[in-house]
Length: 266
Image 1 (cartoon, one colour):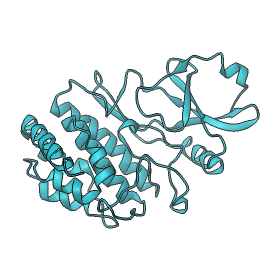
Image 2: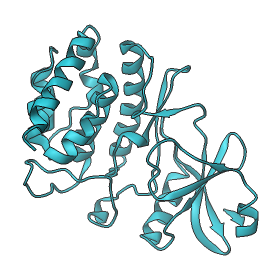
Image 3: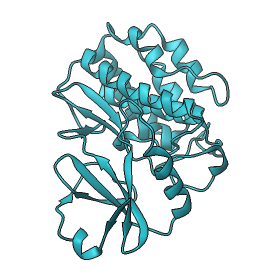
């Protein structure tokens, strides 16, 4: 455990991420190590401490996990983690080729699979919790203090919750909903179009309708995966070979046109 006082913490340099930092303030311990201090130290504090205690003792490839917990002025208030230096979020633009983007996506798919193999799910999946380093062509998942055990349904907050239709009720979270949200993240990153907002606002049926314009060989498998709420999961990396030779620019244009046409009705 790391014991630190508020006065000691305030001497550290702040790290200001470019993305949506959900629930914490970040500080540099060194260039390689960050401290995350919770904005609301009383929200699900017992569960978050349990999560940090569990995660700091395991290793998951391409996941930036807690490495130790922080006791601030005598109370559990955050955790230590490695700094994925020179990284951007999946929401930020990149000059990477399509092949390099697929490599980055595969990295984060590996992390997501491993989390699910542990019987956990993330819940709070969104573009800003997926990072990439352009020069290394490497991807990573971050922000695991809200990770869910099966008993945690409804306890934590998330950027958005899934629904099937625009006016539909929310779908119960599990590994499958993680996977569906990850499809929106990966496709947004691939085409540089914010498809996550389409899914969050319009629901799964509207998202599938938008995806139907894509010129890809695996379109049927993609649509089927988006309808899978509790069955065997098809992860995005299983479909990656079908995206290698796609007409990427054409698909980007088709998506943007379809989104513009669709949201004129909202």
